[in-house]
Image (cartoon, rainbow, N blue to C red; front, side):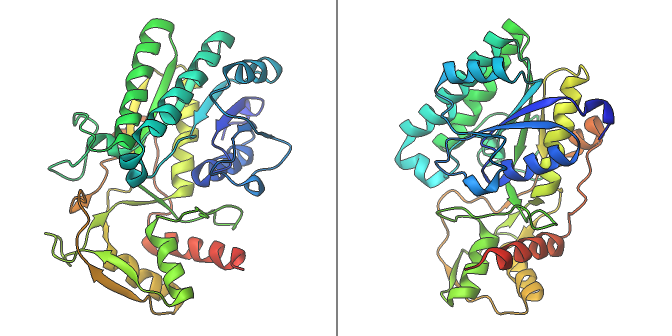
Length: 330
């Protein structure tokens, strides 16, 4: 990144989480100063340099105001959110309280201290079950769960705050973040784990078969197809979005993806190829609400911000994830 940005300070909320910690590393690599706010409800303390970690909850507006006053920031990247679709169906109230309420607290603190640039970690769940794929940004909001609805609400709030107060923002919508930092510094360690590739590693390690939900979809091999984006490429998209805002660009919304989909069985074969081990798996009934294929059309992001996926090969994604898993296995 440009050396002119070296003295910029970026606040990263949820920076001790999976995507957040990878983005923090890349921001530091690019010469930015970084401050992380995380309540560690899901983030891992060891994922962040303790010198830059501030542990408190985003609902605490006064703590955020004090932080912005003590450590003035040029922009915010907002990752902090609950992300389990299934949990959101059972406990919608905590998703709206955390994902919407805490976001509004953050935005209020930003406005009070004059911070007017924000990159929001949104989701392609705002589209619900689109009838066509690849998915473009002009599709309407159609969330089918409280998680997706909470992200829609935040996007709409940001639109009004831009109109009323000039809080410029970029919303990045993505599906399947995967892989790990190529140097092994950060990767996936969710608890509970819900992402496919770490679950396949677990099946190898435990011998307990992983469930493949449905093999009768209208896809080449009958299993669901998804767009897997390497977390390092995703982090780069957030940095480019920050730089666009700091450079005076208007608010915008972008999908982030490779534009290529891989089926569940293709991912299993890739994991077996990389690890040299068989993945125990079994075919189970379909899950309600799983669309056959979800692939992002990221042409707008590529043409507007010049972003390109650099680690788009499935083998790259699996190899970096496996290296990280091996490093951190007990």
